[in-house]
Length: 299
Image 1 (tube, rainbow, N blue to C red):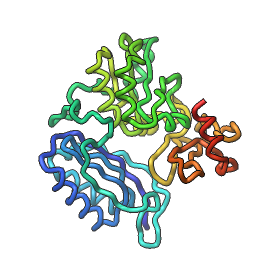
Image 2: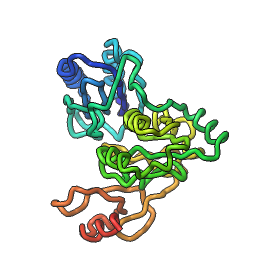
Image 3: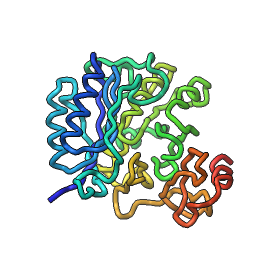
Image 4: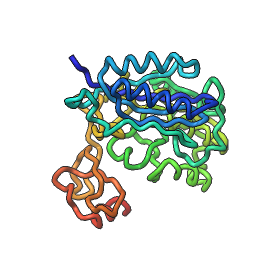
């Protein structure tokens, strides 16, 4: 019986020949009937793949056969389903590309990696260690390392949510001094699976933030441990056709529809073809004109 699954993964390590890694991952993915997105650079690899569980397990064995990827932390999730050809319906195709950055902060020259990962990043905290820190300190600041839209439907309670549309906006905000008041506090960065915070935390450390942490495994790992009975509230935005995932049957709905203001976790692209923005919007308001969406999201 087929079992649709999705796997998230990343590894920061020096890669001498990213193009060779690209060809390898493309060929393995195509042979196993996988779909998804994989980005490779001289600093490492980042990807999300969907397919039948058996095929993904074969991919994982092959992936871990390469020395720098041997200890990769794979994060597994439920897929929506498989089509008649046994391919994941959560992704339109398999895309494997080489880029300057595997996370586009626009600062490839600032990132340093070695065989142990990112050099100079924040201290990794397990979900349990995060709770210990919060219980022992009353000045802990959660810092959302995702785009603002993602945080609209789910975030850690009381988190600082920068007003950014892309990861490239973080460098500008940090350089502007907008968050200099946090430099004397323990700052816990968090993101979906952990990769964006690997880079973000290193950028913060290099800019004088004295006590920076990153949630190991990201929101995904935290949700596996605590579900909706911890410090997380809402749904987790994901970059595939699922749109979002919940960690339990009692997840809070914290998103607000851009059209009518109703509680919703649903996101959708703006109905105006010339507008590339995405919004939190309920099903009834999905066709609300672009002007109304934009007015609500930017006010």
